[in-house]
Length: 121
Length: 321
Image (cartoon, rainbow over all chains, first blue to last red; front, side, top):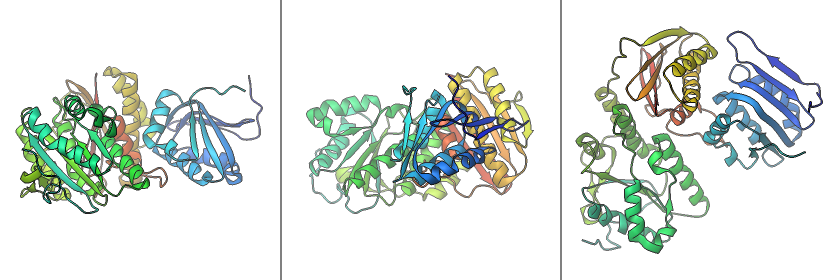
């Protein structure tokens, strides 16, 4: 079922760069491709208003195949900024992305939750 | 012989790390130290975390009987890499101190690999680094060394990486103890990186994405499992990213195959890394930052770092099976 597009829709795919798409949906953001040092700023910019506002921020990671240390740094920063006034929910990471998130210990932050399966509507 | 419970040489006090090696050559000897160590900790209401080999874990659990349930047994201790073991220790200490513990006991046996000199050297480095990483914590850590099965080199270096040796009445300062930074230098000198085999493939890159493509192709051709390919990709990319950011605009990447492992080496010509234990600590997510080499150590089987004024070389080993 296609989600309604709510303005922000970033797609970067350049030679030598990682390909990333960040799409605003009715529930948050859908992220696909590779989230790396070269493009993490795009996600930071797209989510800035939501993070500043607080509350629940849902990132659907089902289409994300790769994330690096810079991406973890950004997700951690978002989690820390939401601490006490919201929550970062990381939805449907693939097994590898899940593993990397686990290594970094992101869910040890009280403000970050990893949801492994598709939530029912 | 059973040591008395409150004998000063047996029970070190204080609020900082005490790091002992205990060399044993039979199951009975193993128990003669570890059993009173654990029991006394439980009697004093100290949290006790044990990460022994599976054989020794079974031995201890049998002797402890019901008391065994009061010991925290590290999960998958025999699969740990140094970076994972340290992360388990640090998380446990943080949790227990949060709950009000003023003194803790840890029992940890490194997972000495049988087929990797590089892997053995990294566990030695970890043993030495514990003296730095856990220094400010109120922990008594005992590391049993199996003289019957481990190589002489491993047991000899236990005297260099542990400030104190032995247990109970036998416990005393190790005259051979070497400060961690000096031990790392000694180790680097003793464990020179062997030259790659003639068939090694070499490329230079100026972008991490290109490093990732190359490493994935090479790892796949080597027959690595899917998860190990992802590990090689992530680790090589992180190391290359560090090189581009801190060192040079170009990174040289070489890959080759050993009997048991795929090796990927990333070198730069920067001014080197000061910290001889870089990447052993998994950063606290509440503070963030600095995950690059730590992640590499988590996803690879062995990571070797050699830094000098002429540049830094990082070798990533990923086991074929």
